[in-house]
Image 1 (cartoon, rainbow, N blue to C red):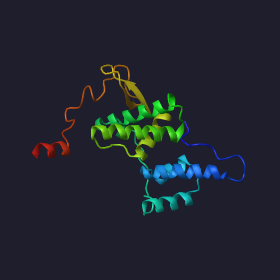
Image 2: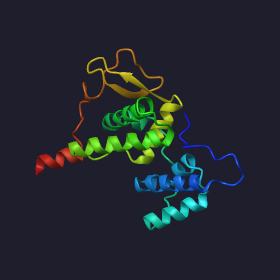
Image 3: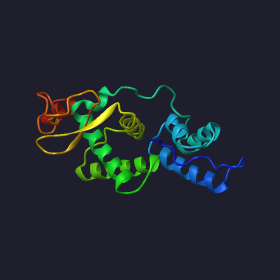
Image 4: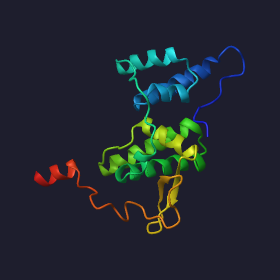
Length: 188
């Protein structure tokens, strides 16, 4: 699945309305913390314009460096719960909401953030990680497996076991929730 919003107009001259739409979308994505590589991949605006827009909105140059490129992070305990929630929201927006590409991801990411704000939990997924997750899923590197206990759909490796899958919520690892944050709250 292509995460681009739309193809560039067929005429040699770019449509002013298309540029305005792309610029508004870029502003939204930058506001959510999307990296320049995500903007370049999802939008048809020139790189120079995206860099200037990023500087104007954030007051700093876009961060440099490579994007995360490992599926392993998405299948660890806490990130897996967040990745599964986001991917299910994205799929709902795409399938039932009739949205496509970056717009489906944007709407799914908003739903993910809204759900977290209700529970007071902090987001594990930045917009860039969410975009990476969707790309991995669309390219078959990650899949969804249904938990045989709770019937929820969870992110798993493409070559991982899916037949008798039990999610990390139904069967958490032995040290789940015993990190620095949990230790700090028990001391206080």
